[in-house]
Image (cartoon, rainbow, N blue to C red):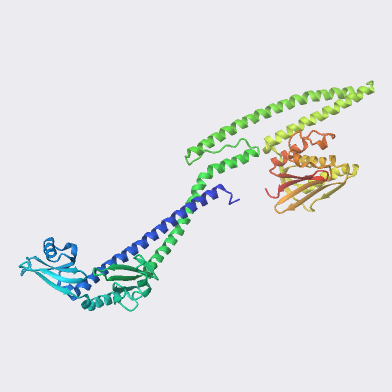
Length: 530
């Protein structure tokens, strides 16, 4: 029942949508954070690689310049002079120093570090227009590189960092520590794109101008730890937000369904016969709910007026029928008192009196059914011992069953059971159920069983009569319905309709179980506590 509730399904749908949305956002944020961390580490690796490349060429001389610039920033005038004399040269770095003897003199003197073929040279333009040229041997700068690598390793640790310079054939030129770049990384360098994440390290490759390669390994553990912390916090936030979203979704859904729920409750009251009930106007200012409320109340008011008119017409018709029937019955009874009345006329008058009595009973029963269905609140409810009332009525019916030769058994509790009911209507219910069992049972038995099952009272009337076909069982409670098996018997088809009206007016339930040729069982279910 809880699972089938529209309110529950809507609330869970909103909560699921909220959870999926938050999860998608958290996943996207985690992905972005991880990429940002990688970009930050890669940017730091680029800075390290730039400094290492400068030391690779300049060595200890790097401190003698005010600033080291990229080769593209070398002055164009001096570049033209270099290229005129050395066309195959390429400026890799340019260092400059401030000259002059006073602080105000900011003249820059540039030194170019050039690659010719596969060799490096230091070049300067002299004052006379000549060019100073000196060959550089990177192998001589290993000590500067080792010191730089050692400082990096000291700050980061071997488990988080590694750096090496590789020859063209991927053999080692210099590394920060033994195993800084595993041999398997060097084996896959030709096939793998970089940066690459392998074995808890991220490897970044920087080619040097002369064909050698600088490769830097940064550990993933720290950034994964950051990501795990962020994910943990995100999971907590996700749980809290999902819980909050579920509560909000439940409250919103409850507000949306409130109008439908009130309408359902109103329909239940109307189905019980209370057509005077009206829905109160919604205080939420929801136009759709207000329109539904107004339409429902207008419909219910029209229905109530129609039923009042119908009851008035029915009462008038019944009254108009009762009066002439009473007069006719009185006239027939007066005729029957005459002593000189011929015997054949006396017999006819007796038949007329009997039919009039049946017609009056029919009218009264129809009125009782209509009144009970239309105004269940008019029942004369009182505290009643159902055991005592049932026992007295069964004792009254015992003689009729014995006269027909039927075995009539009664099983009732030996203690008092009190319910709120209309005693007269309950007796009529027993009369119709036991009367049908007597009427439709030619041989065998009839039985009444009164018992308590949980918080309900079960009143069952069983017989071994003709039974009711399966296709007719849904029709037996309708007015004037008579099955083929009962056509030859006296009756008007209103007994079970009255039983159904009495049960419905008391908010009880009645069930039928029947097999054709074997008998029927009618079971009335009565709440033990109302």
